[in-house]
Image (cartoon, rainbow, N blue to C red; front, side):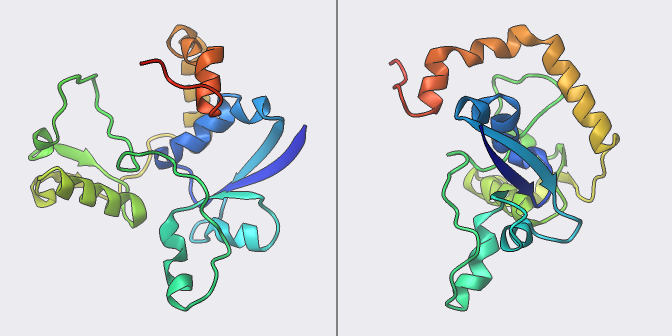
Length: 185
């Protein structure tokens, strides 16, 4: 199995697709074994790429804006689209199959304190026709649990709830994710 090193600029739900890729066994299915790290606070994962400590990094395309504006070639080449949505997840205390963006106005919303995730959320609000200023936005939130405790609780939940996620691992679904099959109509 080939070995790769992955580095995150920060570890957050914003990067769930890559986290799912690693934890769901998809890399192993492609013959890759990965180790991962998180950059020190205030340091971009691009530095790990430049120093040869990482083969793959998680970063926003905006990391390259300054470099490109100078007419230089960015160190990190963005080669994968994470999703076709707004680039983040909205979660609630309970499932809401009738969710509408307008219902966020006046609601308490805990947000990442800045950078690309906040900019994307504000843009999504704009696209949905809601006034970000009408949200009760909680910025500067800090986690209740350490990373290690949160990861342990997440792993435990997935182990305790196999019936929820195991159907997602069907051979056909895996082939679709790898581009080897098409979705049924």
